Length: 260
Image (cartoon, rainbow, N blue to C red):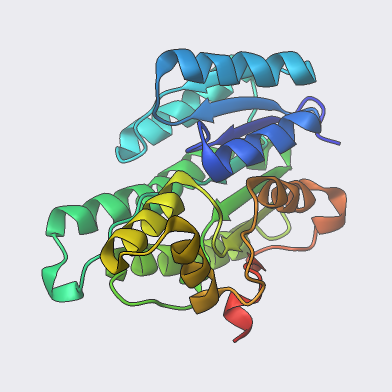
């Protein structure tokens, strides 16, 4: 379905981003991986996706907290491949604290990575996508882009901002062959969520299994995690021809979280 297309997935060396990159590669897209991690492990991931799918897979270590670095990554990808078809803004970080105790540096870092990076990537990618008369921009927001939780001022603000940015870009690119949508996952078993499980277990003196159950029961009626593979499938759907008229909107993959 995506043979010959070129996709950048930020934050794709683990978790949700890696699941998305693998799914797009299965459908024939060439991939630019991005994110932090051990260089040998990243190379193992890169060569594995390349070898399994017969597509070209490259790695760009741009620090997405730096808007200029994001723009350079977009330009370098277009320079190497001659095109850019799919941009998945997935990179994200988290920190929790009551608003009056929230460190200003953490606020800035979360907004830079979870929101501003997407702005810089989109602004740099849209001209090329307009030239091609085809493009897919998919922002990985969160259930927290639609509803709030305590102690997550920066994350909720950034993800709500990402949903708003999605709507604006969807309107501005309507009719150009480009679509822009947000995917809003609930709990997904990623390193970020594993840390939250550990924190609950430590705080309450309970097992990780019990902490996992508490985490899910509080928000996600399905009592099960969404998987990176399911989110990859959702992104693939948004890249398909049947989604040509889906733009400026959100798709929740949250086990019923935001239906409550």
